[in-house]
Image (cartoon, rainbow over all chains, first blue to last red; front, side, top):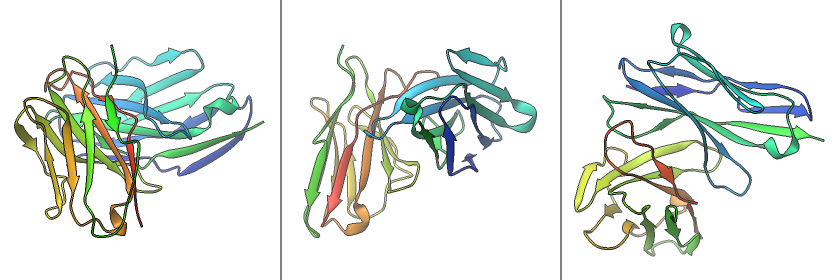
Length: 115
Length: 115
């Protein structure tokens, strides 16, 4: 069975602070994909990144960076120099061949960035 | 190229009524997925459909819920005799193929409120 755990339910920071969101996943499949989505207060889901199980390179996109470590089954997400517009709920998700094409989501982490 | 369209965006139903949620996939996409997000929770997979076929309905409640994706027209998620516990955001996603490396693109969601 697939499982995604986001242990932090809510994180509150002051603008310009860095914030790291943890994501731990469980799967027995050797081929899988990991995702991060952002859900702003308006409610839509915004795709941020996809990483496949064969690519452990970390990635940076502007103020966002991701740290994928297969050894600890983690795919953590860091926002550098946070801004008020980063306030949202962030979801980590997993998709595996064994489970078909459905996404398994973590419970989400609410990030509140205060000015 | 229009994205995934869902309508209505907001739907209010009284207990015992029927709710019909519509999803028009992106152009060229023949696979549709429905997810439900209960208040303060992550998204949970409900059903995966291809044109005229249900591929995986393992996340669909056994009673009152049904889904279809006809040859022509949008995918429909139907909830009969709604109860308060059905109040949630329902998201639809589509992909070009069912292969696991094809992205799922999400619609804006339909917020169902049962009074």
